[in-house]
Length: 474
Image 1 (cartoon, rainbow, N blue to C red):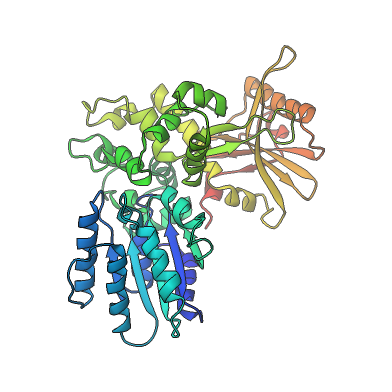
Image 2 (image 1 turned 90 degrees about the vertical axis):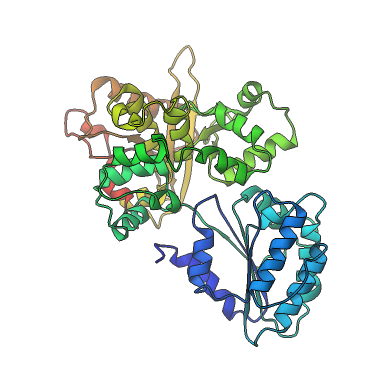
């Protein structure tokens, strides 16, 4: 059973109705459900399907391809190269019954071994044969977790495959509401507080959620997944980055520069200095690909003269790994249960909730009643001077209807109470933004919290509020 993904399913099924042959790439991070989506959508009915071999040699890849041809009903030897392999695939297609023929090649990036010339053979197969077929009956779907490879070799290819993709589908993690729906379908009894905490740890990655065991508390499940002797996700961090990037070392150096959860982010120059990576095109590509994969976000100081962009780690699981897993020796299999209510737990919780809010901006806009209003979504920061304190605003909604929402995000186990010091901090942010930015709209302060805001003497400075329940909207 597929949870959500209605739009993606419609797009995949529409490939069957097109008059021309179709070439679609489905991509997204590891464990997000790409393969399951494709197989379920087409009811496991393919003319040919194949999965690349992780870290396989060229010989192993070609052998596996032959085995997939055999499974599809074709007797053939192991091809000598990819040109020969695709020639065999042509024969299989020619012998198939009339009608649309869906070809599904999963983990295509794994098949691209050094000197194998996979892309050249794929280009020849598509440009030289598929598009020349009178029948126009091929639906080629390629898939991969190595988002950077998909982007470089297919989406931004400057060779023969340039512009050849007819469709591209980026599969993103589940939203909070989709995870709640998944939990119900899996008979997991979870309150929304529980779903939120698990989301702050696991993100919206379906595979991670599938590992949750009913009958256990959130803390027990987290201990079992990450800290027990046989924890299924103990080694997930290394696997995640090695699958997405062929040479993950420099990517991890960049991630580590942001891993302490710095609220204000870190500049490009600071990343270069701390990571000791050489500046240049390769470094820029690393930043772009980490952003494309959803691990980091880049934001500049909106409408101000301070133009240096900041980078911030926003991936839920990666943040949890660095703040709560990496420095734990795994000597305590009940680590998470014993950490609850500690200072470190509360720091992580506050930072993680901010990340979740930034992943649910459409739900925040809906709660504010501005889904249909043209909105520039940005962040803002200003460094402190001798005359004023520095200020950081993680979410600003600059609206076409003449307002700007300054959004402040706070996690609290109970109704959040604005105290004097915090009220002064909020006012400083508003004053600094009004003074420095070029934004002439009226400023509305919006609080995004878990349980709402206490109606004390400082409540009137808030123009609107959004609660955790609003973030669960589908």
